[in-house]
Image 1 (cartoon, rainbow, N blue to C red):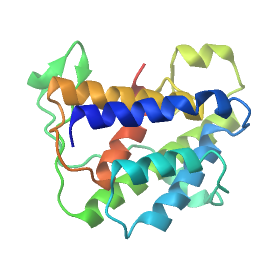
Image 2 (image 1 turned 90 degrees about the vertical axis):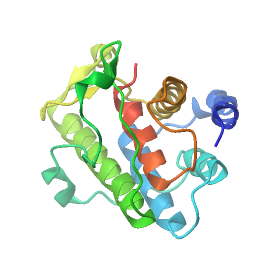
Image 3 (image 1 turned 180 degrees about the vertical axis):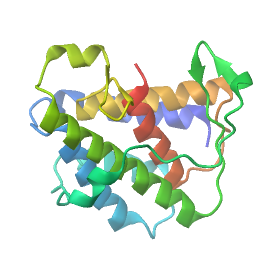
Image 4 (image 1 turned 90 degrees about the horizontal axis):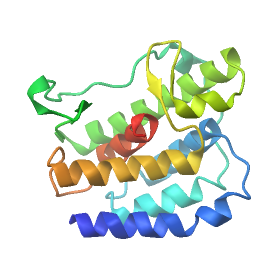
Length: 191
């Protein structure tokens, strides 16, 4: 997959931004809707077209019910990434992408979504809504968050992914379910 194709996806997503302002949905609800769409599409081969459709539809799709068991999840999934600090760039850890199997890739996406949904639910319960959170906060479980609105989160994740492609942190190549998980996780931490 060429970087230019990712840039087209980003441009297509930006087109819906004015319409999204009218939709009142929390990031936690959006991620639960996205999880449901992921389950609906899990037997399809991932593609940028499927990702774009899912990312758009999650704004209006019914969210899956929240599962209390998700609150036990305290950390994002960590896979077999190279955590050698020699690949740090400008203080940002660049993750080396490794695909094992389509099932592992989907499990990674699912675990990212479960973690983030649980984190957001905990923050909703424990922290009042404040404008200060948009400057970034550390959650009760010690993880950083910068983007709390669905569109801002997805937009930041895709920008971060494209930047990491340009920097060589991710190989330019096949799109997997893990790719969408990485985008969702970057949306949480990318400013």
